[in-house]
Picture 1: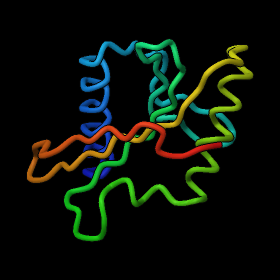
Picture 2 (picture 1 turned 30 degrees about the vertical axis):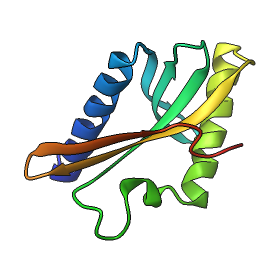
Picture 3 (picture 1 turned 120 degrees about the vertical axis):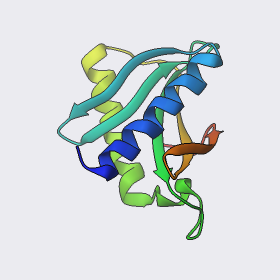
Length: 120
């Protein structure tokens, strides 16, 4: 496994821990389709299906991790979410969140959860 992939996996694990601490139920991790991959699909405590994009960086020198979620990436996430809903038959309340993780020198320095990070 490459160091970059390892850092990403560590960030996703930190995101899952944070969401579970909030009482969320994880429905899927790394769900793939022809449009891309959904990092985390989870049910929040209000029974909203949330598609969570996890961004992990070693610093905020060039903006926070969430700054890496450009228009192209958001479009891929939205299309992947539509494919997930089609595959599962779900058609109700959804939301798109971002979990930004700062991971430096082998440890998690910060985890931020941004709800309603973007719209579809």
